[in-house]
Length: 158
Image (cartoon, rainbow, N blue to C red; front, side):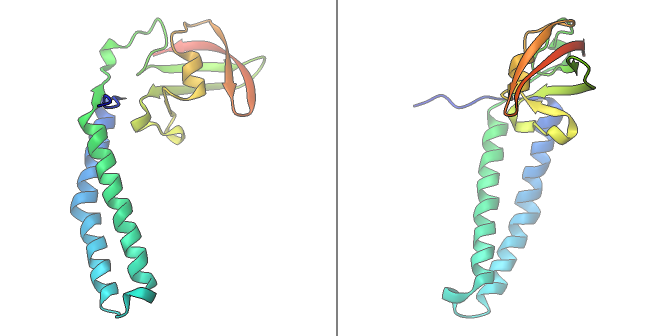
């Protein structure tokens, strides 16, 4: 049997997943069951779009519950005090400038389970993070992105 995938994440990321799981199990699941019950009361299920929609949502909710339970079960917590400020690691917040004269950008490198680019959290599996991991302040790095190559210079690591 293949080994389970490990999901590196911060303690805050794990807690956020646990809250989402609780919400799905206690609130969303009941809402969907109620929608199915109401849709059944409309009669013929073969042409009942409300019923079909509710069943699709139920499948999504149950799938998400299973996914989150798996992520929590296989979580590997990244402790902030274990991350080095000497080089970029999982859990680091790295600031860089795009060369030759780009703006400064900062990202926290987290596990895929808690990645949220809109909050400045990128997955350790992303092209930018893969290029930055193991590098030090002052290093110039070429990052492969879907839009082509990008050269950056690391200005700080926290």
